[in-house]
Image (cartoon, rainbow, N blue to C red; front, side):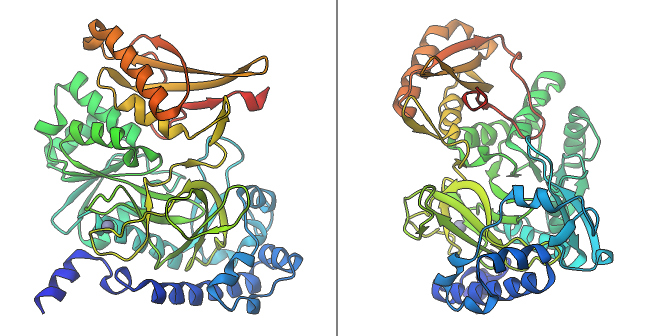
Length: 449
Ligand SMILES: [Zn+2]
C-alpha cells in the first residue's frame, strides 16, 4: 500500500508512465490506427496523400507497418492553408465551428502554419503539459510565474493551464516588462517559472545589473521549465541558468503542429522522456530513412500526435535530430529517453570543411568558458572553394584582464569538441544581438551563395 502511494505521488499517470514497452507499443499501434482512420475519413488532404501512396488505413496491421504511412512536412501544410474552410484548408477534420483555439508557428523563416484546435484538443494540450510539469516536481504548493507575452504563438499557454490543472497557483506575467516581472516574482515569492533559456539568462542579467537583485540569493524560484531552444539540454547552458537562479532547470520540447511531446524529469538523466502515451516518436536515418530502434545512432524525428483531432499530426517530419539513450531513467518511467534532448535540426547539421557539426556543439563550448558572456554568433561562409567559420564572442567586462588565457582555452576546446578551426572575433560587451524569444546564433551563409 505504501509503495503505491509513493508511486501515485511520483507520476501524473502512474499506469501509462510505467507501462512495459511491449504494452506501450500495443497501445500506440491501437491509437495510431484510430487517428489514421479519422484523418482518412475527415481530411481531404490526408486522404489524397494516402491514396496517392496506394495506402488505406486497413493496411496498417502491425507496429512495423507504420513506416509505410507517408510523412507530412511543414511545406505541405503551407500549400493547403489560407483556403476554405478559411484559413485552415483541407486538413481540417472538424466543422469549423468546433474550433476554439487559433495558434500559428513561430519559425524564423517562411510563411507560418496555422493550427486549429477544438476544446477537446486544448484539454489534450493541458494534459500533455501536466505530465511534464508533474515530472518536474510542480505540485499544488507551487506559485508559478509565467514571464511570456500571451499571444498567437502557443509557447507557454498550455503550461499555464496545466499548472492550474495540477493545482498550482498561476501568475500570468503577460505584458509586464522584464524588470516589473522580476519585482513581481520577488513580491509574490513565486516558486517556479517557465521561459526560453535565452530569456532565463537575460532576466538574471537584468535583475543583477538594473535592480541589484541576485536571483539565486534574493528570489525564491526553485524550478524553471524551459522550451523553445535546446539550451536546457546543453550542460554548460543549463549550469549557467541553474547557478544564476539557484534553481533546477528542466527542458521540455514541443511544437505548435505537434504538441508538448518530450520532457526532462527531476532525475535529470541527461535527456528527455518522450511522452509515449500521447505521442508516437520514431527516429529515421537522415540519409536512408531506415527506422532506428537502437541507442546511440542519430536520426530524424518523425512524430505522430495520437489523440489530436482538429488538424491531425501524423508522421510529421519535424526535421529535428535525436538519438535513443542506452540507459533507462532512474525515475522509473518507462517512457523512452532521447539522449541530450533534441541535438539539432536536420537542416542545421552540416558539413563544414568536411566535418559534420551540430550548432549545439559550439554553444556547449562557448557557455562552458567562464570568462565569456552568454551571447555568441557563428557564421559560416565560403571563400572560393573553402568553407570558413567565424565565431563572434564577448568577454565579460570583469574578465578582460584574462583575455589571452580565455582565448587560448576557447580555441583548445573548440578544436577538441568540434574538430574545427575558427576565426575568433571579439566584440565589445553587450554589442552582439540579444534575443527575447528564439535565438538565431548559427548562420550558414553558404546556402545563399
Ligand atoms: Zn526520468
